[in-house]
Structure formats: C-alpha cells, structure tokens
Amino acid sequence: MPEPRLALRGVTKSFGEVSVLHGIDLAVQPGEMVCLIGASGSGKSTLLRCMNGLEPVDDGEVLLDGVDIAEPGFDLAPIRQQIGIVFQSFNLFPHMTAYDNVALAPRRVLGEDARDRIEALFARFGLAQHMRKYPDQLSGGQQQRVAVIRALAMRPHTMLFDEITSALDPELVGEVLDVLRSLRDDGMTMVLATHEMGFARELADRICFMDQGVIAEEGTPDVIFSNPQKERTKQFLASIL
Ligand code: ADP
Ligand code: MG
Image (tube, rainbow, N blue to C red):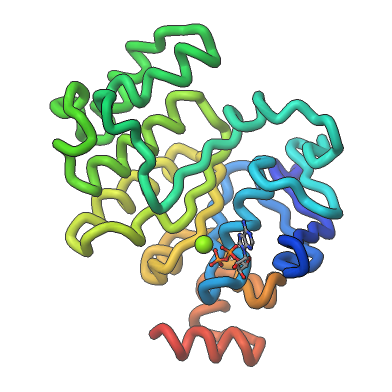
C-alpha cells in the first residue's frame, strides 16, 4: 500500500456535551473514491469537516500525506486549497457572476488571474455559455456545478462532497453526478457523503457505513450492498431501499 493521501486515526469530536465522532480510523489512498453512507445525524458532515480542518478535532490525528494537520497551530490555509469541499447548499455570492464567484479565491489567495484555467473548467462542465450569468439566472444543477468549479479552480488534489445533490430537483441530480464521475476518471481523490446509493454502488471504491459516530462497517460496494456483515448495516439498507 502506498502512503494514504488522507488518514484519520482515533479521531474524536464533541459539540459541548454531545459526542459526535468516537474514534474514527479511515485511510484514503490517492485516486480513491470513498462514499460515506448512514442515517442523518450519524456524523458524516462532521467527519468531512474534520478532514480539512474546518472543524477542529478533540483527539486523534488527521494526516495529510503523513503530516498531522490537527496539531494545534497548524497553518490550515494551504490545506483548504489542497482539499476542496462542496456543500449541499451552493453558497454562491448572489451579487457576483458565476465567473467572478470562481475567480475570487484564485485572485485573492493564489494572486493569479487563472482565466484560462477557469474558462477551461466552465467549458469542461458544459457551462461556457453561463459564465457571465448571476446565480439566480442558473438552475440548481448549474449553480452546484459552478460551486464545484470554484473549488477546482484552487487546484485541489482531494475533494470532499457533502450531499451535493440533496437540495436538487430529481431531474438535475444526474448532471451533477456526471461531474463527479468525470473527476473520478481524472484520478481525483474524493470522499463523499451521499444518499445516492445507485451512484455509490456504481462508482465508489469503498463504502463506509456510519452509525452513531463510528464507521460501523466498511467494504467494497458489492459487499456492503449485497452482503453486509453487520446487523445495523442490514437494518439501515433495509430502511432506505
Ligand atoms: P450527518 O451529516 O450524518 O447528518 P452531522 O455530522 O451533521 O451528521 O451531525 C452529527 C451530530 O452532531 C448530530 O447529532 C448533530 O446534531 C450534531 N452536530 C453537528 N454539528 C453541530 C454543531 N455545530 N453544534 C452542535 N451539534 C452539532
Ligand atoms: Mg450531513
């Protein structure tokens, strides 16, 4: 096994009295696509946010290429470029065009205009005609693709996606999943929290089933969906399928 791109060791996290993650161990290899599934409240979003330092962990290690970014005082600004994150709500600035939403961070953080790279990203994801539009002139699926482009413009090597299709009308889900498919073909390292079980089954290298703050079972999609070993995995799958 090569060194994991991202590895969590014994990560715990509480909000006040509420213990949310209880000793998470997870290693993600370069180019791997890992899907987190599990009931609402099981800790998927918190886990994703711990992976790029958006949420400080209480205990444990978050290793990026072997370096612990959870150490107190670690400079997280470069990490946020290397590990992009996209949320369910697109969070585009409403008063800026799609292009300016994407160009903002490269200009400010990287100090570069990045015009060619940004235009290429819009073209790649079928949005070349929409670059100069404002978010409210775009469909939900188009806005979410702009949000993905915004993260990609920082040239991350890893992407985290938190239920990015959950707020979309059903007919718009496919165009966003196609973006993920294309990134996977590119070899992007990805961790997704998703309710799209068909998609996870088709494309994930590995599925992690989360239950009450632990990874209760992990395995290939075939094993998790066709032959789960743990009772609570079976119960969860029975409840959603
Ligand atoms: P999931 O994404 O699987 O639905 P979350 O990570 O959002 O799960 O939430 C796990 C638990 O942590 C829930 O009980 C939730 O209420 C709690 N939680 C999440 N974020 C916060 C927060 N900022 N403050 C307090 N509790 C939180
Ligand atoms: Mg969540």
